[in-house]
Image 1 (tube, rainbow, N blue to C red):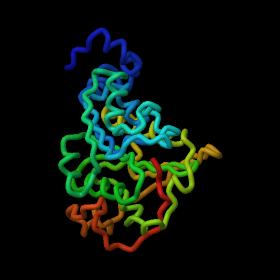
Image 2 (image 1 turned 60 degrees about the horizontal axis):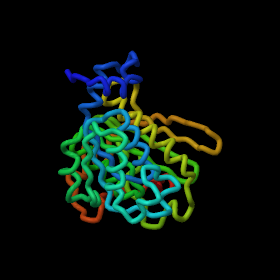
Image 3 (image 1 turned 120 degrees about the vertical axis):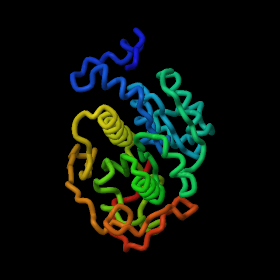
Length: 278
């Protein structure tokens, strides 16, 4: 049992007051280990809210540096951070927000060669990336390793997210493989409303905290979509695909083999949402 200091009790008092969380739930949060892949539009609110909540260990992996065009939505970075590695910028803000949190910053890309080794020590993985190949890589690595994760994607005014636990529908159950390069628009081509990243990233952070505390119902076997222009939210019921190439009855993807962030897949392309942006 964690012995909270007086300052920690004050810091986390609004969680401790919640009947469904309490001191026991806050202890689980403080003992949690969460990896966030991507310190951009989605990763920013996820990291800030998980740090504020007191997640004990926050890993963040991103090989990019802060660009001025990021600041419209990537709220963990400030103007003076331009040119700085995103993981270093994120670590500095988290340390200032909550020194209780142990931050593990990895300034590198997640690849098929390092994914399984990087995710192995974490309880939950958050996909905050901005391209299809890495989203499929995260999905495949987490399914193979038996790790729960949250998928998130945004474009223009729209967002979508689902949560995967072992045995539930995964991202590939919905979309079999990445679309061909340049087949879907990116946010640099089509744009994205900055606040949409905050809306979706906050939902992903809530899923993490619900998982760590065992509170509520996760977005498993469900795809949550929304359009910020109309504020229309929709939940689509999913079924685990018995023919899924990674989590199905007879998987054809049994290891991560590519070196460029793509995973092997010979399944025909299904229709995908537009390219996501973080």
